[in-house]
Image 1 (cartoon, rainbow, N blue to C red):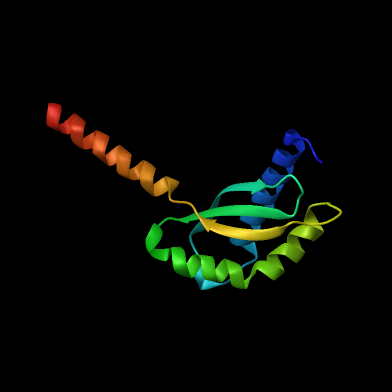
Image 2: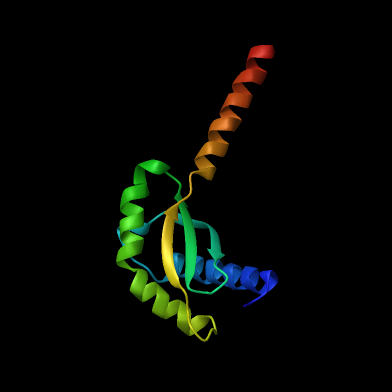
Length: 117
């Protein structure tokens, strides 16, 4: 089994290549303004969990995940050609609410600061 450092390097490479593909190669309108927040790879290299978010927020989560699932075969083949692994992991896409939660917390803090002044 690969070390944690190797797994992290593989995940980082997948995130980088997938991000570039979303910007340059994929023309699906469901995937406009979508960005990759994180990628994790399991120890057996069977699955890569890809976490995505959008500028507009969770309102686009359904269509974005549907677009990614639709393109998952193409994405996996293209990534396998770019990332040198004996067996390339299957891609599983998940919505990441972290950016929206962070924005909400920042607004709450700003409201608290404004109330104290």
